[in-house]
Length: 350
Image (cartoon, rainbow, N blue to C red; front, side):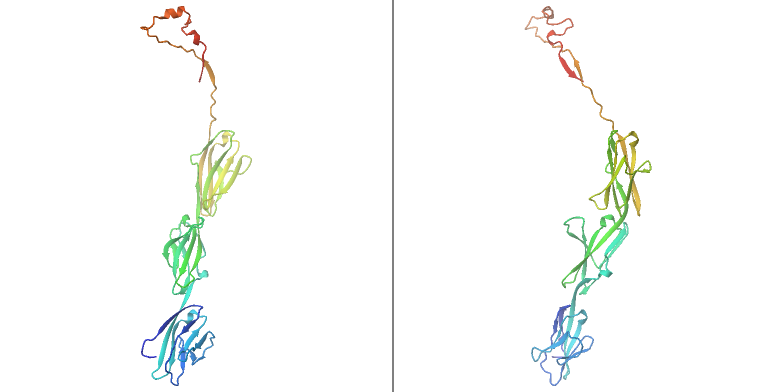
């Protein structure tokens, strides 16, 4: 080995594997070969290990070869090793070991679930280690949609900040870490957005119904956490009894319920304005709808009237010599001027 030449070799291994640091010497004289680690600690003298580390040994498949074998490599094994012979001049063979470490996410130092109010900023942390330094990519997973694919957000880095968060941002987010050393890793972070109730009326113009019938008033309430709900009339809360039946149904839409009020056997006092209300620790909302009376359809009686039809006969006087007097004399017209043969024909009308 020429000690003045740059004859350093570079060896790469993945943590947990085994690696051979090569050293081939042509001339030793009466000198011994030694290995020195990156901390300048003597590892071996000739083929004997000089440190208490059973992972390390000197391998000599041939006379000129003095390789250093490291099993179960750790990331702190990285660095510059030297294979030396104290000849004159001294012979040095350098081997730089790079230990690659697959990416890992430190869960205790990373976000797991974040709950915050609408309008605030959410900070998602994905603390990643690995050698080389992993790249971190963020995705959004639409968990409400069955079979939906992940959507890449387009931002990279161990911290994702969502400014002025809205209820539409309520979802699962995923950080994906990769440094080219398999396997890549990922972590899901649940983001929950709290917001005040919002009440929506399917029939904002109101509902009409006849006296004596029953009707159902409905409203939709969006809120997280779920709102306390109630129906009121004239400022008084309504409760389930013989007059009212109140039910609440979960909708397909996220964080949404339908509050239904069934009113039985309508009387005139039941008509008026009803208020649907929802409240949670962030606030409340309400909407008012009108229940108004519908008159039953008027029934129209069928009547039968008799009308007298007058059939007029238009005669071309150039072709006939008939006249009215002859018709009268023959009895074809009655005294009231109506043709006797059509008297008494019935026509239905209104």
